[in-house]
Length: 528
Picture (tube, rainbow, N blue to C red):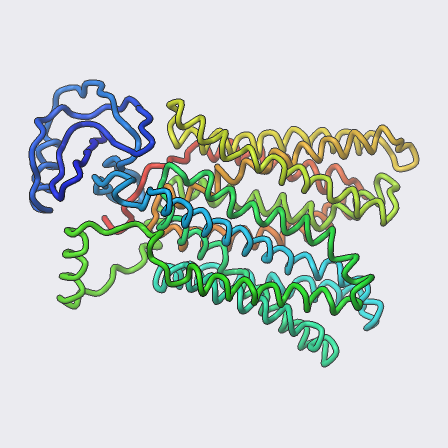
C-alpha cells in the first residue's frame, strides 16, 4: 500500500491524504485516512509515517493532485521517503524560471545534434578518405569501429562522474573532448592510420558520457510533470543530428574544401557550444531542485560529522525488475537503430536495385519521419497523464508503440523482400518498402517518452549511473547488430528478410512483453 503526503507553504508539513501541484490536475489515489497534524521536523515525519503504516482498515478513495511523490516499495530497493514539497516550491516555476529551464533544455538539444553530427561525419567522409589513403575494407571497418571502442568504455564511468561532479560539468567536458577529437582528425589521418584511430577513440570517449550526463541534468533540473517533454526535446537532437549530417556533410565535402572541411566545421561548432554552455548554464544552480531548510541542515550535519557518501548500489539495480526492463529495451533499441543505420544503404542498393545516389536520399526519409513524429510525442504523452493515465502506463504504452509498431512494419518489409527477387523489383515495391520503413522509424520516436524517461522516473539520484549501465549493453548491441546481420546474410543465402528484418522484428516483439514489468515508481536504492 502506498501513502501520500501534501505540504503547505510553511516549513511544517501536513498529512492530508492528497497531492498538490502547480498544474492543478486531479487524480484519484488511495491513502490511509489520518488526521492532519503539524510536523515540526524529521523525527516527527518518521513517527507520522509509522502511524500511517499502522492503519489496517481499507483505504478510502480521496482526490489527489499530481506533484508530490508517493511512498512506494519496489524490488531491489527500499521504500522511498515521500517528497512533501510541491513542484512550485521544489523548483522555480515562475515565468523567468520556466524560460531558463527550457533554454537549458534547448542547449541540451543542440549538444545532441552535435553528438550525432560528429558520429555521422565519418560515415560520409570515409568514402573519399578511403580513396585518398587507399584503405582496404578491413581498414575502413577499423576506422568506423574505433568510435564505439571509446563510446562503450565511458558509459558507466560517465554515469559515476555525473553523479559525483554533476551532469552539467561532465557534459561540457564530454563535448569538449569529442570536438577536439573531431577537429584533429584530418591531421591525424595525414600523420598515421593509428593516429586517426586514436582521434576517433577520443570522439567515442567524449560522446560516451553525454547520455548519462544529460540524464543527470534533466533528473535534477526538470519537474516530473515536464519530464516527457524535456527528455523528448533533448534526445530528439540525436535524430536531428543524424538527419542534418546526412544532408549537409556531402555538400560541405564537395564545395568547402574536401573531406577535412567537415571535421573542421563540426569540431569548431562543438567549441562554440562549449563556450555557450560554460557561460550560461554550467555553474547556474537556479534550474536545479531546491533543498528545504531541513534537508540542507541534514546534509550539512552529515558532512560535518565526516560520514562518507553512500556507495553506489550496483547490486540493487540488478535486483530490480524495472531496471532489467530498461536494460532489455535499451539493448533492443540500439540493435534496431544501429543495425538499420549500418545496413540500410546496402540493402536498398542490392535488394531494390537503387543507385547509390538515390539510396543515400531514400535513407534520409525514415529519419525525417522520426523527427516529425518527435514533435507530437511529448505533448501526447503529457495529455495522457493529465487525463488520468498513470506514469507507468504512459511509459509502457509509449514503448509498446515504439517496438510493437516497429516489429509489424519490419516483419512486413521482410515478407515483401523475401517474396520479391531483385530482378522482379518494381517502383511499387520500392514505395511499399520505404513507406513501411518510414512508419517504423516514425514509431521509434515513442522511445523518448518510454525508455529514456524510465531511469529518471525510478531514481533521480542514480539516473545517470543507471543509464550508463543500460547504455553499455546498448553499445554492445550496436556492435552485435552489425556483425550478426552480416553473419545471418551469409548463412541464409543472401536473404535480407532473415538476416536484417525478421531478427529485429522478433527482438522488438519479445521486448514489448518484457517491458510490461516496468514500473515508474521511485525506488530508494540506498535502502536494504
